[in-house]
Length: 631
Ligand code: ADP
Ligand code: MG
Image (cartoon, rainbow, N blue to C red; front, top):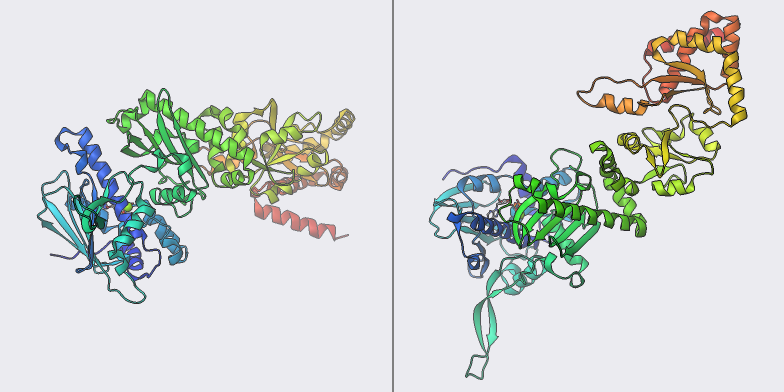
């Protein structure tokens, strides 16, 4: 039989498994049992939905046999089994996401030993205890059975075999026992029994093993030792048990192994609903953003069970997009077993269910925000972007739902604030929610426009995510206070007297301003005197409508026609540069164009844009330096 090599990406992981002497390698058993349990779920589902594959539920189980003499552990399940092709695909490569993530962590240089035990590393973890693994399997959909044999590094062979029963048998031939490699413990009933209790108690299929017990038979006085088949697990799924009986550790273990995360969840949401549609839900909010969360290969969704029968993984329609970070499962007695992905979308009960789940997640988050602020902020750092996108998407139809869950950093203590908190701090007479956009808080803080707004005592929200302005735009207002960019349109910071003074000054300097506008041409819509600047000479603002931040974001998107915000160059009439401009206008009017250009370029730079013609800009500055020292 020709030996096949493992796919390259599997080799590294495999290598790690074979050579690691890791104290927490216990988890290999949990991994094999979870695979067997999945296989039983699939077989049972098939039997309920396909006439040709009927099977008696009593037959569905997992059995463990320990053979001390030959030093083997055998796990037998009557699950769905694997075809030849499936053997090849499933055991020849790392296919599942947990391992991929694991591999990525390794590549990032995380210490091997720390993470193996916490990770669902799947089937290959058996190589931590076995020197050779034999898999014998027959698929429910195939008459021919196959074996898969591997000693790890040197590849594997697949061959046809005789096997009557549908399902899979996995024989682990243990490594040599040595002082620092105590594998023999896994041949002890006691060890296996306690590992099952610890990691696999809630598995819904019986896990059986022949164990030694003492019993006093009827009519006899002396107890005798007998061997009998016992079910080692309690078989009650965790989510069906009462909350008060479940320890935090049990939830954590369950989450980690079921959803292949190496960190315990930030929040567990476990509840049941009786009513129109009854169900149990066990939901989790991860503690960290999954590495692929913002990429296309992140698959959101909840596991769906019906009457305890696993129906599908990642049922997408159970979660709104903005709560896509939630992992977990729903088990309902009221759904149709035959529900398919296509029907799922239109099913009325599913919709009710989804609405219900959404409400629960929302109220949990609200509760966290109110009572566990720090925890909520940590959550928001991880997944806040999802909520902001939620506000923006679908033309803002979810904004009422989500706006109170949003956090922004603001000039008030530079900490996170809710919109409600912002509004409650608003100054008397303030009727707008001010925000400023930029790449970083640091950058925003230094915007020329900030000074005066802060001087007037207004609080400003820092918008540092691309989506922020879009979300604010869609919300338009919060509690009847309009969102207002300090960078756009008219800020209305001045009192009546200041306004009048500015109006007069504008009239006086009309020729100058017009000349500058003329020199700049289409680059700007207007050149005007500013009432938002304090110590800085110029700034660039946009008129109402498309802002310059949005322009940047939109122009980064693929397949988007170039857009351009209407720019207005504002000059600070109280800055010495203005007096200089007035003087130049009188003495060297031919130079006003150059000055206008320079100031416009400066304003562009401050706004984080590129100067349109850097060489021209540099030359003009150079000229100016030379000239200012000529006389
Ligand atoms: P995962 O369980 O995360 O998919 P594993 O490495 O544990 O990854 O298993 C790889 C695949 O091998 C499984 O997805 C499954 O298709 C198949 N498999 C493993 N064990 C069994 C089994 N006992 N019965 C049927 N299929 C199995
Ligand atoms: Mg697995």
